[in-house]
Amino acid sequence: MEEKKFDLNSIIGFILIFAIMAGMFYFNKKTPEEIEAEKAKQEQINAAQKNEKDTTTDLVTKNEAIVVNPKDSLAMVAAKSQLGAFSYAASLPSAVDNFTKIENEVLSLKINNRGGYIQEALLKNFKTHDSVPVYLIKDGKNASFNINFGTTDNRNLNTKDLFFEPAVSKNGNNTILSMKLKVSESKFLEYRYELKPNEYMVDFSIRSQGLQQVINSSQAINLDWKLQAFRHAKSASYENRYTEVLYEYEEGKDDYLGQGEFADDTEEDVSWVAFKQHFFTSILLTDTPFKTASFTSKNIANSSDLDDKDIKITKEFSASIPLELQGGELNYNMDWYYGPTDYKILNKYERNLDEVVPLGWGIFGVINKYLFIPFFGFLSGFLPYGIAIVVMTVIVRIVLSPVTYKSYVSQAKMKVLKPEITEINEKYKDNAMKKQQETMALYSKAGASPMSGCLPALMQIPVFYALFNFFPSAFDLRQKSFLWASDLSSYDTIAQLPFEIPFYGDHISLFPILASIAIFIYMMMTTGQTMQTQQPGMPNMKFIMYLSPLMMLIFFNNYASGLSLYYFISNLITIGIMLVIKNVIINEDKIHAKIQENKKKPKKQGKFQKKMKELMEQAEQQKAKK
Image (cartoon, rainbow, N blue to C red; front, side):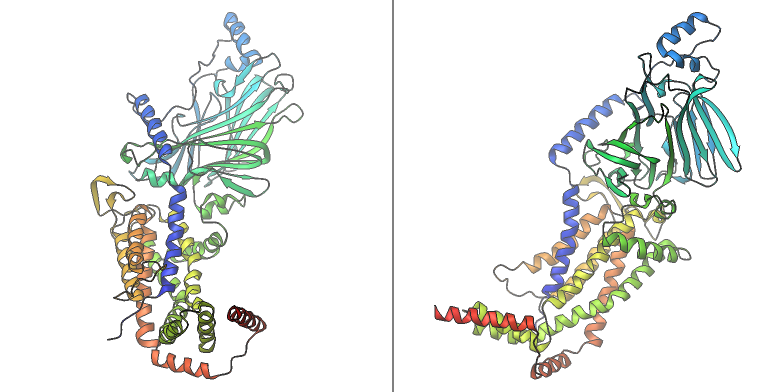
């Protein structure tokens, strides 16, 4: 029985694919110092929160707000000494800790009189992993929005400590809320909110009227926005991986802070900043770009050291934005977005917000945007989501089958040529240049190339990496079940472990196990039941054959089960295609006859080939003279 030989080109393809995966995990890996810092920080947070019901830290400073009775002349004098012209706002009936609620079919907002900012943002149509309503902001504890400014009478004030007067009106079907921080009835700082039906985007503006003589134009005016990201998924570590600050600057460029602890960045001409919480996002947009803006992102949750069940928040974000006066007044047209991190929804606004969804850079993002997203959207329009993944997998593998075919034909050709290559290696074992020259001549005559098997494997890498980004970012898969997986956007669980295994987790997912088995079977088919003797300088193919499925098993245990499902089905189909190609389509005897026929035909050489042959002959002659 003829001994099967391993396919080096397939192995190279798998090495490159898993090298990319290993690289992504390596660069996202925290250093021991970072882990210790996170652990120490979390211990401080746990100690501070021990006697509190909620583990979130109140980002709104509990300064005592000044409220006065306008009939109390002494109180008015005292208020004026502290607030100056803004003591008028403290004397109005609205100077109480109250809120105004505006809502539509998808979004509910509560805006506090004190500070005029959104103290609660509820997404009506979504639930967390434990069936709790999805709040991006709740009770004003995990978010703050403040403008710090100086006055012409040398006071330093914060809008979060002052009371705004609310007024609700209608513009057709739109709900308008005007929040005015008044100096008088005709002089004020206004926050204006306009909520449209079925929209997550809220029109928002900041403008002042008649405050030229009140606001000190020589002192910096700073807008500070802070948010603590609530945990919404069953795995805080997985959610934290996709929770970050993103922003657009310089008319269309976009960037992000990444996963670093206490990351900080400053950019110019910023047109929007997003505090993304994996599947839900809070975004502040402006029609007039901010000349500068600074961002920070701090890790709160570190699930490698903590029990996921105890984590309520994952990250803390902040943005510091200097505002500019125009003619002595503030005038900024903005928007708030509180909604899902859904590519289809974000893309429709045509504000480059689709960049909030991590679909991959370059060609990988293009493949997702123009191929996989619309194609999967079409399939899921009439099929259950799990079935849509299976159907998409089948079609993708069929489309890529010509690549698989070419790869296998190349393998067959190289196998047929193996005896002749061995003969050349033995004949010219002491002359490396001549050995290479004769080997290349054999390849040229036979119409074979060792690279023709490697290139098809490389061609599949963009598809692999694009899907690696697509499934964890596909909002449509969130909380969609299939077979034993309750949520295709997160890992599936068939067993919960009483302990945590480093890099693996505290649970066992079945789809990664099935995908790993399928990869192992495929590699057994391509490498053969037995291995050649290990050659010096060559990788240990048997080790790689076992390593690749192991990497899949470990890395994908905490990834979206939809991704593992895809690779399981994909490898099953690939195994089937390989069996059909090997046993039905390809006949090695015919390939051998074809190669012998090609070798008899005169091979026309191009200019480059002629030049290379001449150079090699000259080198051979010079070597012979020595």
